[in-house]
Amino acid sequence: MFLTDKKCVPCEGGVAPLKGQELRDYASQIDSAWRLLGQDKIQRNLDFTDFKEAMGFINDVANLAESEGHHPDIHIFYNKVTLELWTHAIRGLSENDFILAAKIDVLYTSNASLKRTA
Image (cartoon, rainbow, N blue to C red; front, side, top):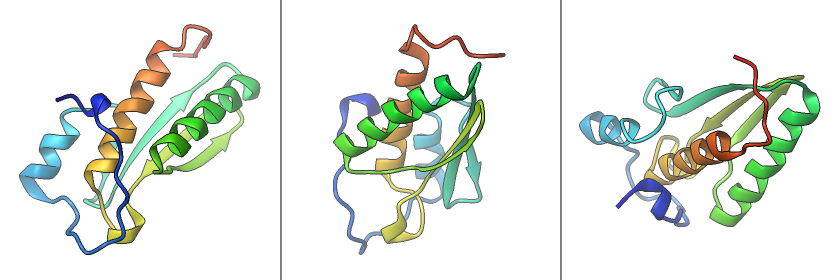
């Protein structure tokens, strides 16, 4: 099953964060533009033509995050957006982070109205 076919599940803690080979296996299923920050977070930088386009994308990500019940940390710098994912309840990465990352990847690549910069 693809990550995009899965749904995030509530995490209240009590489970160990992903580590080692399991973490690498999940990372291999998302766009290589996502960077692993230690073993605790994943991060992706995205470029847009202007602020309005970046904010439109952020609003789409916000709607997706609400529907999944899992929310990224979002940083915006005019036409640049940085997204960070991690599961706060376990202070590390869970399957939810990779599910949301995969769905963000689809959102970013499939939105034909975006005229992104290189």
